Amino acid sequence: MTNFWTAYIFVLTGITLLGLVALIHFTRRMPGTTDPEETTGHSFDGIEEYNKPMPKWWLSMFWISIAFGVVYLAWYGLGNYKGSGWSSTQQLADETAAHDAKYGEIFERFASIPVEELKDNQQAVRMGQQLFLNNCALCHGQTAQGYYGFPNLTDNDWLYGGSGDAIKTSLEVGRRGQMPAWKDTLGANGVTAVTEYVLQISGNDYDEEAAKNGQVIFAQMCSACHGADGKGNQGIGAPNLTDNIWLYDLPNQDLKRDIITTLNNGRAGNMPAWKDILGPEKVHLLAGYIYSLSN
Ligand code: HEC
Ligand code: HEC
Image (cartoon, protein in one colour):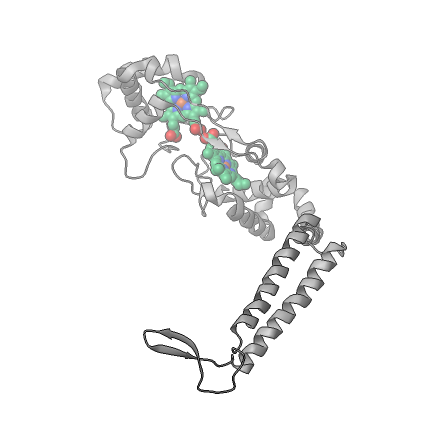
């Protein structure tokens, strides 16, 4: 803490303590009488106030509290002022260092085990799960099954690949899928047609006439990213459109409507990069945990 804030706390607390002493002074029994029946002269709706001192036990507690405050302020404030050293920042740094020393060894040991083999180590999986709950569950869900726009990590269906290396790369550098918007290029009819085609290749009900036109559009506009057969391209995170697993399908909403929304507006899922936030050892352990979920 800087000297300024130490002084600030000092002055503020000092004024408060003086204020408390003043409060005791001004609320003591009014001077000049020993008559127990005398009143202060205050009268509220006919209710009068005796001129009696505070109970002794209560007053003593008050004085003891004030004395404690003075001693504590001197101990903490002066000690800190002279740089005796305690600060919450330093305490956190010390505890973090102790924690790293304790677990660093374990992390290091796991770092030498390939991602695919970590799943056989119960401790590694447990620690990976803990890291997942703390850092990833917010988006991917507690059970890693994802939600609208956040991929399911347990189904062995991958945007960017499910090998140990691919998963680790996803975590290290982050991912950002880029699906362009097609409303202006294709118009409403074009979007509907190619939607019917996507419904066809994914094994859903579809309109035959429209899907035929859609197939032509798909070959021209979509196959570069999603592949001629619609099976996707993990190099750029273009999803497989034939497996009927959807990143953008709201529960309780018509799939066709979701696909049309995707095509009209485009999509850009964003997965943050974790290497600098968590460090390479934790990322390694997390990759092992994610791999273990579907293998
Ligand atoms: C802010 C939300 C968010 C957080 C937090 C997040 N992710 Fe993601 N993650 C995403 C999104 C969105 C995608 C899909 C990116 C895309 O659409 O291109 C994704 C993709 C992935 C993928 C690639 C999936 C595939 O099919 O190839 C993996 C693996 C992954 N996340 C793991 C993790 C792990 C492990 C963590 C915790 C360290 C994490 N994510 C934290 C949003 C998040
Ligand atoms: C530049 C490459 C590219 C082109 C061209 C492209 N897409 Fe995509 N598409 C993507 C990517 C990448 C995603 C994933 C977006 C994300 O991760 O947020 C995607 C997502 C989708 C989805 C959502 C899938 C899901 O699981 O919810 C559909 C449907 C889709 N594309 C259909 C098409 C159709 C139809 C066309 C042609 C009109 C097309 N895409 C053209 C790259 C492309």
